[in-house]
Image (cartoon, rainbow, N blue to C red; front, side):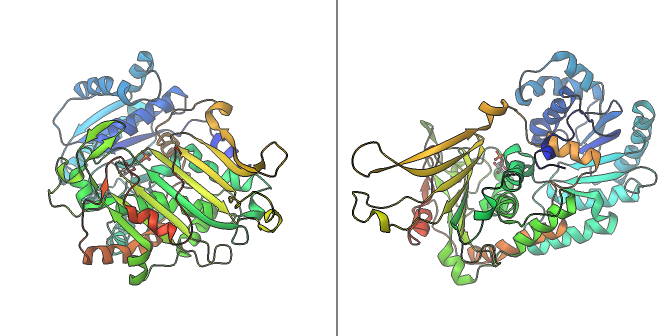
Length: 507
Ligand code: BG6
């Protein structure tokens, strides 16, 4: 398979006949992401004609009321314009079952409903369960599915998609893995990280391995450091309950940011088969040196936003957000310097940062190359040489840019810094999507490449565990950054100490 075909290979080939069971169907995730993603798949004719959805929620409601609710909500979140005929077609496949996730009776009724759907939609006994619930339900739901005989695969397949957060530290992630593996094979578990559903994230592989020019430079000989920034302008919104227990570190680093690190740092896999890719990603994450307590104090920064101006609007501080403790010590910003201890990356720092209520929404990766020797420019007006930077823009703009020096026209040697830009939208057209459609389709066809394996999840928690421990032991002085800024001062200072600086976008 050629690298760019990994994104295109299944266009025109719909998913397999199956029922998608969504636990927590009335929640935010299902309404904002999952149902719009199904609409997108329907629009591209990527759902099998024998496909149905069964939403499970604790609200008492009949299927018609549920469908009407979706009809109202879908246009708000679906990518692009919504076609009413297509919505009707999709709604015809959507069903609802009310029940408590803690009640064994729910699972008995579920078994009966699924058997009925197999008859009406010809779904062949293939089911995948999407756990869009609070994490406390993950293990109990899987156990009850098992008890009801709904995880066993006899002439059909049964899969479970588990949302993040997968555990809240290394110990709980291990315990959850063990619990799930009591009832399921590893190959039935699809641990989702929606960052891997983003086109530009998948494109990191194509970019690295389909081009001859960068890979020879992709190592400690030529790369000075790597920066990964996931900046958000949104605050904690209505998710105070969840976020108070999570914070920026747990919410973003062991999953989304380390996925990006692994794609940048991994060795070329021997194929694009799921385990070949995931083996290399897991090796990259395992190569990250866990920080010592002293390093946590020196090489990590946490912050919490106070009130400020974002996009010209005055916004309140984190402690004033709904469902947040007015004395909260939860961090909304995290930055750190990590090192990978292997031949390719030894001594190349990876700087990571993520935060809410920052100045701009921007996810990007900067690969900074080593500076060229200055010797030739000593007797010219040039004062210093800027290092070359390759920037992978993940969102909101999708593209790449390469920064290099060029001579300014004129009789004397003066340099200017120029950027060579490539924008996805301009070249390939804008593809609006939620990021979930590719992952749902992959689960329907049994391709786990873009899902996390248990060892990857545990390795991710292993990287951040000391940070969690040290931060917990030392109460912070919050708030320490203004909403609408680029985070706490210490974040910039961490790089300045190393003679480097964050590249912010838009710059
Ligand atoms: C989620 C986090 O996993 O990712 C959120 O829980 C965060 O806090 C979101 O806002 C960011 O995703 P995206 O796709 O908007 O970058």
